[in-house]
Length: 348
Image (cartoon, rainbow, N blue to C red; front, side, top):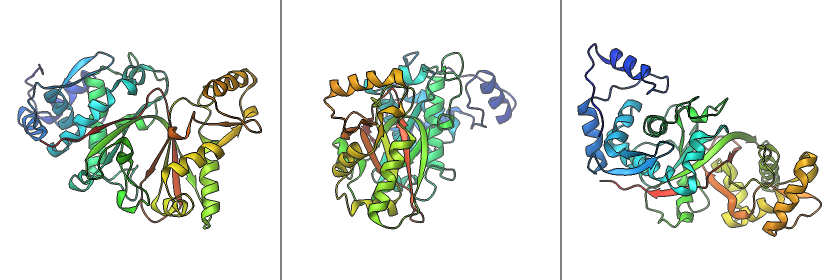
């Protein structure tokens, strides 16, 4: 049951109280008054005491009402509740390894990818600057997830969340939508078994992002640059190669269109990346080379010329199209500790 507290003194007093309790992210919050929380619960279309999942590491029940409290504090519109509920359910999927993500020293945190018509209805940014500021939906849904992971799951930085440095993507949780209309390939959620018209959120556990800026204008050069950029920027996270977790490639529409001219399907692109986005074995220190060979032998992965793949198989590449039309930009994101999980967003 959500505990209610009467506080005198207005919004500033409410924020001060919550900040003292360690329940904010350091930014100003919207006071979660009973009326605001009730509106968010109503928009969820579920009873307030309905348990969505148990959030690690406390394994505390994430009821709709508790999720609504964090949504209000983050500034979410009530209509965003179904997205947040699906995101929390996906984060608690066993394959995401929520306990590890919440308590590790690795600077890893969740990233939400939204697909389907709800991107338009709620105003998610999938165009220019989609990973940056400016979108109310992206910012508040991601922030609400982070608040819920702290306030329900108990992942307080320091005592529980042991990451010495953290990273900016954990501040509010990354939230982005896919630019389906500008993609030359089917949208991401269809690869997870959903219909193209379904509203879906996919959770990924990411711990870094690096830009791949292209100045070339020939498709073959662009593909080569993307491949090398993905290989050279992300494979050394302190583990033996290949990284047992996915690598995400996000391409702007211009880059995706050029690459698709050579790689008509995502699977062809994955297979190309697996074969070519490799690094020399001596890129790794001596003590990691034999374990890397042992891992590749166990996986049945052939190594030609001592070039090591950065993931175990082609299916470990997650390919997304997002961003605006104005530049030759891609980005890589490394994943750690968890595997992707998707959930249908159910409205009402």
